[in-house]
Length: 246
Image (cartoon, rainbow, N blue to C red; front, side):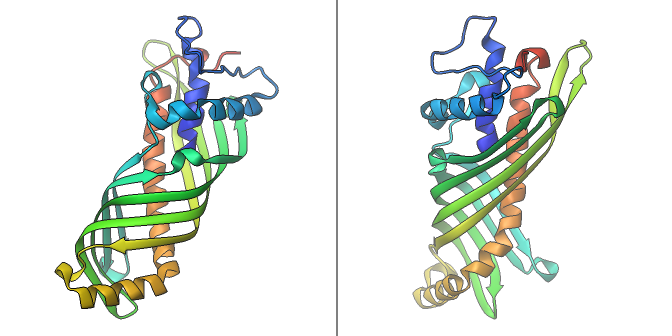
């Protein structure tokens, strides 16, 4: 999510020679000895635009941030199955950058962020057991997470295409988020049976730490895939020498 913001900033140099730089953009150059500081300040300045998206940089809006699906499959024979779909995430634009290290020569970016609160809603489909209690249902879910901290490392290569133009292609994106606390509500458990549904939610709330530990690897994997795709959608359409001018 946050590297999407960084790519928005470093890609601004594409517009330098065309005279199309919007007034809300601060360009950062790789020859600047404090390029990381420049990028951090530029991201803060861009915050209003990042909420709604920057179409000219292929950067979608982050309020809300949309995730099509996250599948959580655990246990022997995947006997813990949960699918979250059509997820809208609110609060991502309230990020604070805690760490930013860039090695443009090696095409490596390291970022740390904090987000005070994230709110989620969407659809769920679950068939699982927590301890010995079954949890089964399909419907809407709502959740909130507080004191979120994320770390990301993005690595790439500069490659020459068939036209002789250098392109920056990102090859890996390692993303990991930790959540301080969270709450979740699932509507329509057991086809709306209130007694069974409440019993299942009580168990889920009492064991929510175990549930999030099981879910986070799948959330991190999905986030990494989405952000890697976004990164390359920005960088693989422009000349590397324009993307990162000296």
